[in-house]
Length: 435
Ligand SMILES: NC(=O)c1ccc[n+]([C@@H]2O[C@H](COP(=O)([O-])OP(=O)(O)OC[C@H]3O[C@@H](n4cnc5c(N)ncnc54)[C@H](O)[C@@H]3O)[C@@H](O)[C@H]2O)c1
Image 1 (cartoon, rainbow, N blue to C red):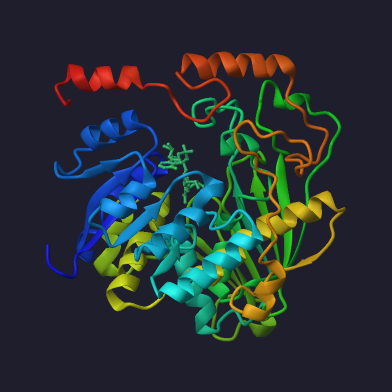
Image 2 (cartoon, rainbow, N blue to C red):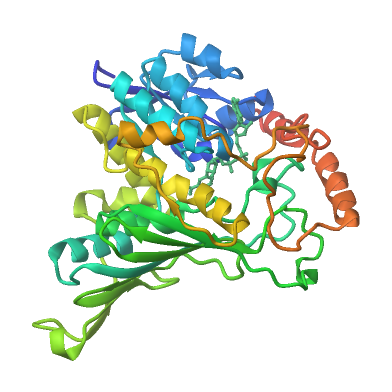
């Protein structure tokens, strides 16, 4: 360890576990971990063989005050990232934030101002742009072979049946997230490949009457959300997100001189040209691209098709160079806010909204008090708040009864968010002498 070592903390021990292995070539050290739940901290520390001198905290503010850290990685609840990021930046820490970056437009304004005021590095941990196929599609697009984007499609669909383990209570974010909100995985790859940002947005959800196929689900979410965006170059992009059947992550581009697509499952790239403008290129080719050689083994070993490696790599690179990363705070807010605006649109018959120019203080003033959010705090009444579903979907009362039974059996606190105790896992670690 030297003066250039980036000492960082991870907040949240679910997805946060991914970030506990620092990029080995980037001079980073995991210094601290924070989670509300002390049991999770014990389990994380010992089951993952984390450093003995690791600092552990259950209180975020205390961690910011006491831990010997340069940066924080935020993997706390989906809709609570911005306030955590703002606190960290103000405490002089760099921030890598899981998606979404913001839960309201006002948070976006405050977050951008804070990054500018503090000069600290901010990056969104959006990993979906960085798989082999999409990095190759960026290379292709930037080479000019495809021409300019006219229309694109991005998807992130993640169907889950009765996911009681990862939605541990009625008010957990996964149970109440509207279907357009988990949008960054779908749109970010297109932004990254084509260097465009969304400027206008609307949204729709399917509203079929027969919802019986959803059985005993208790998630308050429409089957999925569809977002249409006009992009900064004038192109149109459609994204799909939510729980549509068939897990999917396709990215597809139709451009002035050709088209390209990430093959749905096997990560190959498909490229088309019309015979009249193919030039020297074949009319159609399908191939598996490669990583840059020096990082191939690290990227291959990482989750999400290598994306988890590149996120840490680019975050550390930005800190070492003291230059904001490609996925900076403005792109983070733009890609996150389309989920918010598309939800407003869904509730307003498909109305079209401008995406705030988060980089422009004049435009920011219009949104600095826009605190519109459908997320409820635990115990908060839905009365007067925007709804979280727009179709006729209502979980059955008997489904709630089953869910409450399962949550309780799993040790979760009634309708709350956190487990009482993770006794079985603690016992297992004890029995093998880990703790
Ligand atoms: N990029 C990806 O591929 C990917 C994958 C999974 C999750 N995520 C994102 O990561 C985030 C976390 O996801 P998850 O599945 O782990 O969620 P989760 O709700 O299961 O876990 C969140 C953790 O944060 C902790 N936490 C919440 N508030 C806290 C606080 N005030 N102080 C300390 N700890 C706190 C909770 O105790 C919990 O352990 C979400 O935003 C999600 O969208 C991203």
